[in-house]
Amino acid sequence: MSRRVQVFDTTLRDGEQSPGFGLTAEQKLEVAHQITRLGVDVIEAGFPIASPGDFAGVRLIAEQVTGPVIAAMARANKADIDSVAAALQAAERRRVHIVLATSPIHMEHKLRKRPEEVVAMARESVSYARSLGLEVEFCAEDATRSDWPFLVRILTVAARAGATVLNVPDTVGYTTPQEYFDLFRHLMEHVDAPEGVIYSAHCHNDLGLAVANTMAGLQAGAAQFECTVNGIGERAGNVALEEVVMAMQTRRDRYGFETGVVSRELYRTSRLLQSLTGVQVQPNKAIVGANAFAHEAGIHQDGILKHRATYEIMRPEDVGVPAHALVLGKHSGRHALRSRIEQMGYKLSDEAFDRAFARFKEVADRKKSVSDLDLEAIVCDEQATRSVTEVCRLESYQVTAGNQSLPMAVVRLAHADGAPRQEAASGDGPVDAIYAALNRAAGFDGQLLEYWSKAVGTGGDALVEVTVLVQSGSRVASGRAASTDVIEASARAYVMAINKILSGAAVLISDEPAPHWQMRAWGD
Image (cartoon, rainbow, N blue to C red):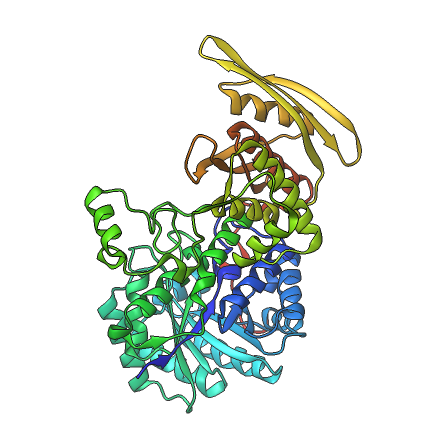
């Protein structure tokens, strides 16, 4: 008999804390809608007190997303909890995720509190949140390096004060599966919690054990696990939602767990997050990587042709990977394109479809036929650009380069607040030259931090996706674009990053400690 497990998605909070993953409030809403279609039980929408932008994102999700519980993080103080209550006011179900460190090293060096003071903070913060009508999940931060008797004590206090979910996180990715299993069993046997209180597993991947540890926690009796799409998160990331879900689905014989996740939405959700953040997963990423269902070795190809189960334990269609068949060409009309996009599971507004259709025609003029992978790249391109304020737009470019000449680029940018500007520059290569010219034409003082490119599909006319990470002063932004021309894709991706920074949609970086790592005493 299978056991239903709740899925707590923290892509928009714990995942978004990692460098380069910043999203605008509108982009967060788009991800939240897709995660809702995916079928998760809880969406942790952010950390409202961290910034006005984070507060706005949480509030927007609370107002417009229905179905899942909407949660937000708070430290154990009234100001944080009040901020969560205000941001979640419109949500159908509101949960505050109170995080309080419990390990000796965290209490001494981060909180600078004695254990007695920390216990009092847990009791008072949970009681206060309950008085505001919030569901409460209490998180014993760094639980796997905490003293077990102290964990039992503080979790008992939190549960008795009204917390209905007790989160036991492996905050620094330190534990092992057997240790995590034993910890959950010990807590379930010794914590004096009211009936109905459940435990949650939250694992980081610093030692590459996040999936194994999560499964161990669930096997021990945890009824919820916390995860992120693509496993994004600080340092080595959080446990990947898609990996845990497919481990359960593929090995029902071993685990006997089930969730409400619609697995066919996994690939689409992964691609949406990649397109909006501009951060790609590695090709060999489990479940959603480009090579997850690819077979190159001759013996593997022979086996697959004879029977897919010889080397595939999952079908690509089970996670929503689109077919690779070539389906459309330059003579295809609007109805055919809309029908195919909808068959692939994408929902576009009329305005968004118009832009996608124009892009499709542009690509079809350069290629003999357009595959599902190409269509997916076009749609993701549209999703990535539509929520970015266009301060400037690339009108034209020209690049000359060769091994016996200095690379030169000329670009023409249209500006929203004035006449177009044309500038030229040289560089170490064609991409470097065009970026230097774009900086001049945009009046932009920025530098390229990271650059990725990958082919979409096969053949000499394959689309190329380019992703960049750009910094200007204290702000960092990503950009992404796809084209059959790598130079064009590189230029358009860079212009997207420029627009994010100039419009104020970039991530603010600072040497100051982030609010997440600060803690005030209760009532301060």
